[in-house]
Amino acid sequence: MSLSGHIGAWVAGFSTTRAPVSARHEAGRCLLDVIGVAIAGSTHPTCALVRDLAQNQFGGGQCTMLGSNSPASACAAALVNGTAAHALDLDDVSYDGMVHASAVVWPAAWAAAEMAGAHGERTMDAFIAGVEVHCALGRAFTHDLFWRGFWTTGLLGSMGAAAAAAKALELDANATDAAIGIAMAQASGLRAIVGTPMKAVACGMAAELGVRAALMARAGIRAHADMASHPQGFATLVNQGVLDLAEIGKLGDYYTLAQQPMAFKQYPICSYGQAAVEALLDVLAALGTAPARVLCEVPQTVLDNMPYGRPADPTQAQFSVTFALGAALVFGNVAPDHLDADTLNDPRLTAAMDLVAVRVATDGAAALALAACQEGAMVTAWDGDGRSVSRTVRVPTGMPQRPLSDAQLQKKFFACVVPALGRPAAHSLCERVLHLEALADVRQLMGARRAPHTEPMTEDLQT
Image (cartoon, rainbow, N blue to C red; front, side):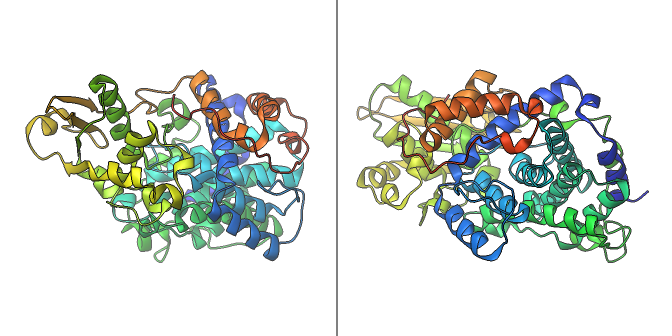
């Protein structure tokens, strides 16, 4: 059986009742997180541009488009909500699949489910199925795909999104197989977009392609029966022929959501910078005074993924260790409110970044402390008298080895959602998300559409 055929058969027959309780619980955590960060991200300037484009270029429909009171088509909603989910780079990460799974799968599952008038249980089926397919593809094509320069969230995410949309639309195995093949034929994603607005947009585009592929398959459109293994197919042209079909065969027996839970971020920056911020905040608490200088030593992989020194714009700032540490020095945190031009031009931030040096830990205590570590950090700060304090964080809080609690995730959700919806509406939404499977119609999820709320953010994202 082909890759897409196996996925199609599994997705068509899947229901959450077959998944481990731990996988269902983790899926609920992912939904709370991604819906919260998407609502916060819906006010991002990039998302606003995409929303304007979608409103002008797509037809109407029955689906929620975050940031707008007008119902939208499923494709428009997936595009906008996928962009919103990734705009702040605050969404979850799967190191099992080397992808941002929820940010691309949930918008597709939600849009297709709203279009179909699906109940909450089927919507949850669609989300879990899409996440598991996305991560299985990440394993099947191996992480080398990412390290060679492909942005696997977009490249493989369209197929995970297609699986989710197909499930929400109740496509049979053959049509789901076709949807995966259509998405694979059009999938794209290059890591060169990192540090540009296109990274968030590409997440939305992958979600939209997944919905579109499912709708095309439902209409009877077909691609080659084996887009993955064809001599001119995906594995050959994109991945040097590498394809481990055994990972696809594990669907239904191995659940990423149960075995390798997601990493949840505390700060709206690349996951490779989370440890550095956490280490600096620990140092500042111990130092007890403003530092005269700060040294951050990290593995090479951190700078490979966060290549910017002084950022030229807010998007580059999300991939700059220097910015992240400067913001932590000035504001005691790194928050979405800091990702704007005014903050980047703030003389206090400029002065703070002048105090920060970042280098690869190639020798000495830092190299020993960070041995075999991909995204840790050792941070040392000196006060004006030359006294120093060092802290090492090998694994930041929020990673699967040090997970955020359910209460901490709810705190993050409210920090994201209260400024947009107000406190009462945020608490009502939280209850609906936590009990998604009880909804008779997923279009009830957001409640009545309302004008944007303007309550200032008073809660801290930091846990």
